[in-house]
Length: 381
Image (spheres, one colour):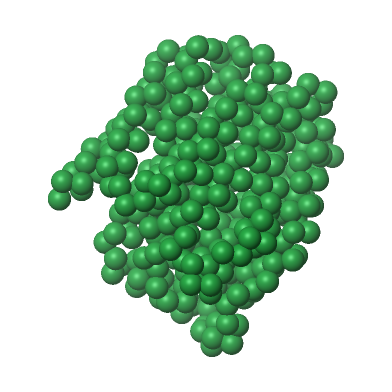
């Protein structure tokens, strides 16, 4: 395996997510006058942007040089944080930032997985994909963890300064991406028309029962991507001092990074689809029913327990994909996640309006319990 390639891809993944703003950006919105419902609308807008751009960017990744999409993603993300840090905050400004950030995310999701798989396939090492992507996910979460720790500390000086500081790791990530080399045969890709990638991906998804279940699994598990956006508000609810926001948020990301780094060892074990959501649901339920500083422990462990599934599902999808539309197929899964992400945010906003804020954690626990039951049914087939 090419150690130089692995070092670059791990460093890029770490720097892209070494984002100090993760620790406090919802707090930034709240401090500038936005209420919880407006924040939910913003997060739903973010998901909507991803829905609009997800499949076009996936097709683009299959048709053109993937390297330049990997280069462009951190540049756009940096622009979003520059806007938030340098200009006076408002709902529209934050919406513009999410538009740019959402575009950056769609350029990268699917693209870097397909790029990594193609590099490994070129070297006849595709069976090592789960191990490599585990390392990538560890790097990403380690980057997030560092960002949370230092973001919380910087926020004690100025939340706007946190946004500006988030730009610098992205600049270094861009420089690393510029050294990447495209591995696909360009001539073969250019012979395929743009819409044919979409048609090929749809036909493949329709013909594969296992792919459809894996996509559904990703959609259900993506609820964690939604509830984590509210964790800063949960910290505020239980009266956690702001100086500890980054430290507490660091623990689940670092824990998830470690277990994701080892998750390839569970490859082929179908029972994890039943047990991990079940345990995570129980922990979330406790967090929602008994919000307090002590129950932050159950919330933290809920994130850690569920973490291996994303790696295992990603690896299985990559091995199942055939043809030239690898990034497009992955983009379809992300498209579905974003569609449901909008739905989750709308449901969460409704729950906050008619019930209590902590009700979103109870609802999420119920969703995971139902998924665990479905996985058990499939396991016994």
